[in-house]
Image 1 (cartoon, rainbow, N blue to C red):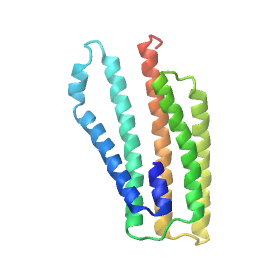
Image 2 (image 1 turned 135 degrees about the vertical axis):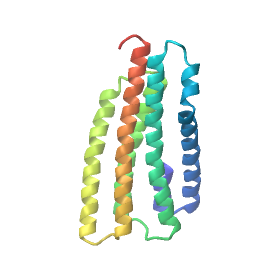
Image 3 (image 1 turned 60 degrees about the vertical axis):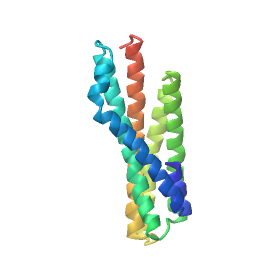
Length: 191
């Protein structure tokens, strides 16, 4: 995600192509897991219906997250590769502001999953609330730019699409966090 926004800002086709390949690799891995879900579930312990449920749920959230990233990087690469007008400084600043909050959310989620400690849920939910509010503000800013004719329709559509996918990504990230929290609670006999 960070490479995509940087690639968009710098109009770096090489970086964007590299990023797209990385995203495709991750998407292929999650697709393989999804396609072979029956085999994976069969290998889990006989009494692990709940474990299997959490695995399937987590995999779905991960796939949705990688889809959102793919739905950002592919059109961004196409935009830059086709030599369309670059995003304005204001658009880049808006995207970077959203990226900063999302990075913090990702950091909290990864750290929580690795440590199996979900005490940071309140902080994550506050960040998500702030993120959703910032998305609203960023969208309003873009609508103003459209009305002022300070940005073209192609850039505007791509910008709004990126923002929408960032919002989807944030929602799936929080769902992933909660799913992992619930699994650890189940595993520890708390549910």
